[in-house]
Length: 245
Image 1: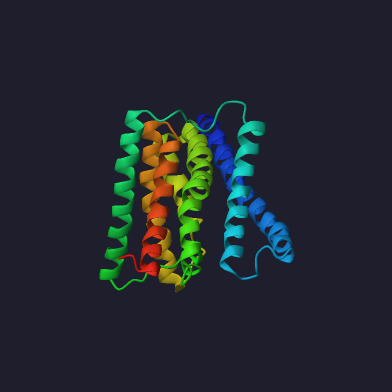
Image 2 (image 1 turned 60 degrees about the horizontal axis):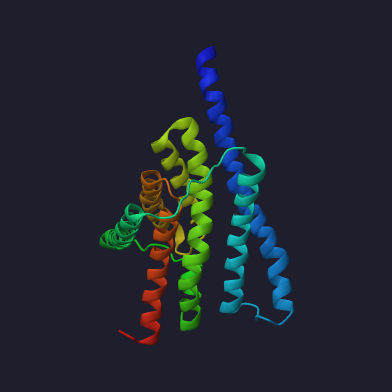
């Protein structure tokens, strides 16, 4: 490697290491909060151990950990603004509508494609917890919109993609952020094939979210699209559980 190549790759490697540490830190802080706060909440008797309410507390703590790390990083580590956002304009709203339709359709299409090849996509614990508990599913609709979407998009699209874009370009940044996003969804049930299918699905959907962020330069757009996609899933399960349809 000549001196020029070393000069080019040095900052890229540092930036890549930096975003990996941010992602690791987000999951570490989330784990600490889960280990320290959730048992205390259970001990107070506010929620029962192993209940769906305890699961909701766990999800809130996990994504609070994400937001804490993102907030610390963007305000204390980097001098320049990292996460692009502005009040949504009419074009942003159009991309949100198209993005929600596209993401939901892509999610269902990928699942059906796997079914044709007799591959069962892994099941997220957030889904299995809601079996027989419509109240939990309804709560997760709201949590998807106001917690999960904002936290995951701020971390993976805002920080990871935003920081890498500066040194490697748009599409490499989208791909790296999306791969990390996909791998973060590996903690599902269903064996190796099911886990791989779930991770691949999240990765493909993440590419669309990354594109929407770059296209609009507004983190609110992929945040709303992501949250709506998850909310549609829980709303569908709620409808099934309550027999509305």
